[in-house]
Amino acid sequence: LTKAGQVWECYRDQNKTKQRDNVVIKEIEMIKMRKDIDHLIKNYFFTRSGLAKALDVAPKVLRDFVVENVTPQDAKFYLMHDKIKTIKKQIKEAEEYQPNGKKS
Image 1 (cartoon, rainbow, N blue to C red):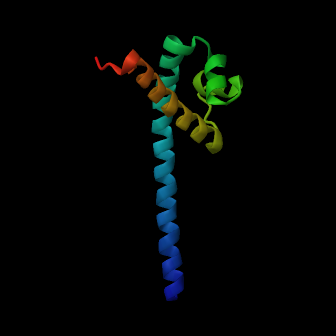
Image 2 (image 1 turned 90 degrees about the vertical axis):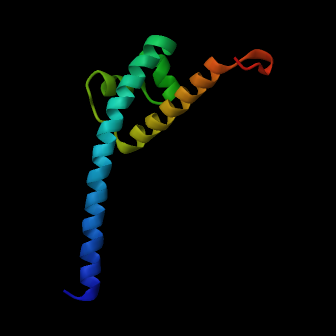
């Protein structure tokens, strides 16, 4: 192989490794997300459709993800992942909120 060919092969192999790592991370994050979703529904939203609205996804997408264990497309996955993080942060801030700025 030429020098350029060797560099390209190295780049391609690194890219394949990154893709495999992303798949593993996505699978692990989906486990956490399902647990978060169950907790949020039980304690804050009470319905999947209410949480779906907050996550900006169709109720079917959320149902398929939680009930049927369907892996969402990347765009929906990252949208849901980011929104769940935001909701959890907002809930934590709301629970720690003290009127008049008092610390507990």
